[in-house]
Length: 189
Image 1 (spheres, rainbow, N blue to C red):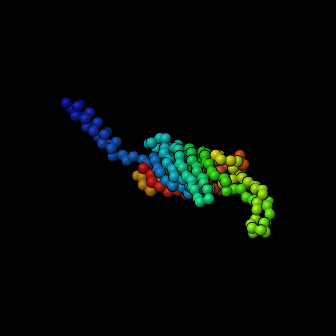
Image 2: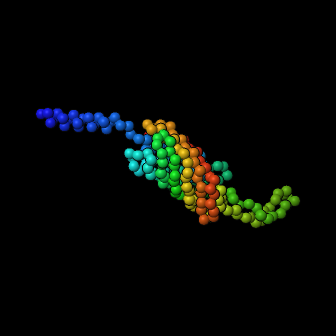
Image 3: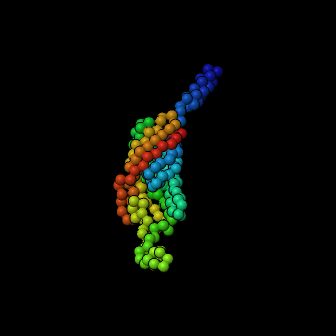
């Protein structure tokens, strides 16, 4: 009987000990201005190891805009990242890609033409297309841009409001831009 009582106490004590531990906030949702989503993005981030914050994880997001005149942009940032440090302060290191598409109709302009004195209008007879660029020239739509992430992330140890600032070098086959940045805020759970 004493052995059974001891085993039951051990079992319940161990079970209560597990319940007393708080779950780490290994997931977060946030909005980011700049960063890998390019102009802005809504993101979901999670750690692969649910027992450690200072581990590898991944983020996926979506961003974009449409304005009058037909100009539009849509992006999907996809990035692997690792957090270094102890809660609530972390250094974030990441790398990945941003897939994006855009409408480039508005990037044609009149190159040559003449003024019609009868109508008072300028008549364009030749157009030139400028390549689209988002900091770097882009060959066409859809396209992909490589992204890196070096920054600071503050995540409360029990979850809640989180924020981050980062430098995001971007690159593609047309070049490398080291000084792109982002700032984000959201909720960790």
